[in-house]
Amino acid sequence: MPVLVLAGFLGSGKTTLLNHLLHRSGGSRIGAIVNDFGAIEIDALAVAGALGDSTVSLGNGCLCCAVDASELDVYLERLARPSAGIDVIVIEASGLAEPEELVRMLLASEHPGIVYGGLVEVVDAVEFDDTRAKHPEIDRHLSLADLVVVNKLDRAAADAPRVLGLVRSLTDRAAVVPATYGRIDPEFLFDCRPNEERVGQLTFDDLHEHTGGEHSGDAHADHLHAAYDSLSFESDSPLDPRRLMAFLDSRPEGLYRIKGYVDFGAHDSRNRYAVHAVGRFLRFYPEVWGSGDTWLTQLVLIGTGLDLPALGKELEACRDGDAPHADERGMWGVLRYVQESESGQELNQELDQQPGSEPELDPDPDPELDD
Ligand SMILES: Nc1nc2c(ncn2[C@@H]2O[C@H](COP(=O)(O)OP(=O)(O)OP(=O)(O)O)[C@@H](O)[C@H]2O)c(=O)[nH]1
Image 1 (tube, rainbow, N blue to C red):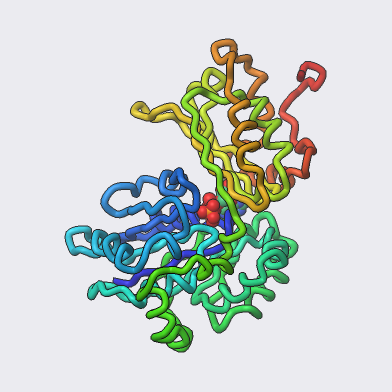
Image 2 (tube, rainbow, N blue to C red; image 1 turned 180 degrees about the horizontal axis):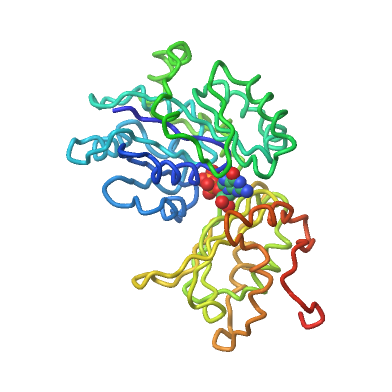
């Protein structure tokens, strides 16, 4: 059974692409191993409808460091057994994982039924230049890829030819596929074949180094995630939408990624709100609460140079002390960042936040009434 690695920097669209594949894979059944950087497994929660036999979640830390190949084998074994009826396994790496390490782990796997199926890298076309400037190692990741999906082209239409050309120049014969919301033909995935030469470059010593001995503390010092911290926040009392918006509006530059689910209590008792921030991009996605759901807020914040205790306190201060008296205007700030439908995407394209600024789209018919 082929096992593919789905990698790409924080927020590039890996979970979105995986969800697309899970919905559109035709007759083929995809097993997923989802690896989250934060302690709360937001990505696993977001992998739609697939939780159960065909999805395994590995939380809290990058797979490239958190488990060794034999642990990964246990998870592969679970998905690869014939009774699971799975045709291909996709490992969604955390946005800070080292793809090379994951490939090595798969090549070192002792599971007889699996074969390394290639590396898929997802690129955020909007953030690509900034991400490369901050993390030159991204170029190396792309050079190892067998398929590169240049995503978010809806937000980078004018720049698409340049970004696609640049990505092509950084890859080594990999297929480069343009995409929006990760909507690629699943055939690309099944056709994705690892380049034997690149795989051959990972020597026996590399494999031995990774699987044979203890990791020394320094072995991972140059990994992308070494400079990143994460904060996981959970609250069973609802958050006040105005306070949360004030927090988000003033979030520090280093806070690159926020993801999770927010309970606004009586402000909207029908929906929880999935929230995603990637750089200055911010969106909320209302999702109707299920009857068995526990009403909770669960957030993961990831970034560099963060004062985590201070951020934690600020989030705690977003708790709503006055929940039963929710007024309908309280949600307006949040609703400005809701993408109503995919056809409404154009409206939202220009909504990306500038630090401290208000978005242009204003659903408030009478700004005087706003507090
Ligand atoms: N406009 C736009 N937004 C997108 C596109 N693809 C993904 N997004 C949004 O980008 C945000 C991050 O997407 P995810 O799929 O969670 O990204 P990820 O790579 O799994 O994130 P991490 O696991 O944190 O690294 C979400 O708000 C998505 O809805 C796209 O093509 N266009």
